[in-house]
Length: 524
Image 1 (cartoon, rainbow, N blue to C red):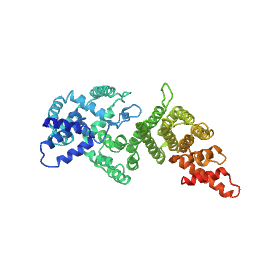
Image 2 (tube, one colour):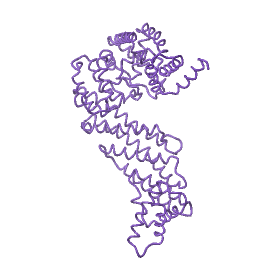
Image 3 (spheres, rainbow, N blue to C red):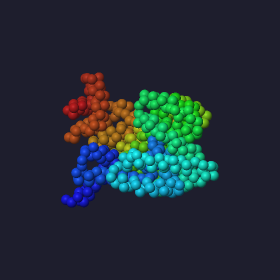
Image 4 (cartoon, rainbow, N blue to C red):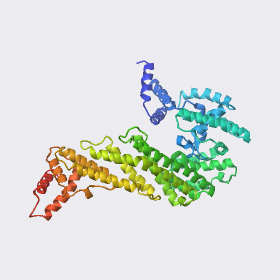
């Protein structure tokens, strides 16, 4: 095989690797010492894979200045859920693109001439740490800072250019909204990072790295409160300082980790954090309401199975966790009693509740009705239905700590349990229609459907239900072993059967005696 053929084969294999795996493998090979020709081919393929998504080298060099204060979450640009202090990759991309097309054109051309050559031989992250490239980055920092500084008339033009580019970029990315327009206060924040970012990046990196440790966060918040920059008064310094705790919200959504900064921070820092948290809370409530509607198929021309994709389940689970975290903080700091923030939070929740009760609850009731009718086989979305019912219970538990309204959830719960119990009884009532395994399988599905809302075998099983006794007896006579759910239901019934047989030792029901013998033979 020729060197060219080997290169193509290796490139095809490496292209399947996740970027993180490719980076780890490159690190192993880089530390392996002298490389032969084949190892060199693998290294080049790995470099291409690692750098594949980083073709805008100048922009990457510039945005590195804003790590770790920057987020890539597009929702953080949506009007109503974006606040001052959010630094998005689109915002910083706008600064670089517009500066590179104007006052920094010569520097941008030099960067684009040098970096691609270097990026063909090694990962871009390693290149950006080279002293000569750091020098170019410093020139970009100073040049951008100068461009973003000036009188009101000049900055008005700068903002117009940035906002026009951002709007066009979101359209290119397929967003369904235009971003919140940048203001002079946002420019102050960007200038603050360009001026003081070097001093703040180490503690910001430490904050993000240890965001899962409550004890460490207390120590970091305490040291941050004594940071030398805290004594500076220019607005750029103040805005840059806010970004350290705000990065926990905007980059990690690590809401509990910001509590030590609320405790140790000045009133101004506290106000900034709570303002940002309010935006996040509104976004969370809106996202839950929207995803609940999509789960229910809101807006679709026909009713059908729940759209419980893997991604939607993940999103709703995560958002519910975030909702719980912020509500916990709001309770601890009595934010819900605040005339402005508390009223706004309740309005967010009210809109979310209306969306869930308007779209999701009726859809789930419809699917419960369909589940009760489909005796021969489970619904295609049976698992999704049980998951969604459990999600509703978790969601109601979270908001029920701070919000009480009407009887929407109570009525919903009663309807589901009534439908499930009716389906359970119906499945066992006509033994001529279906095989015992079908009947018992449907009864098990109805039990499973009721469990998230507190239903279950304990309240539904009775020896007076002759259909249940007959169905379990018929099922035990079949050769196929009981499935897990069937075994659990049969075992619950047998507890009642054996209690009854012990109680009536001399006048035993022959049907129950026969069932006991069948159960014993089946290991129950």
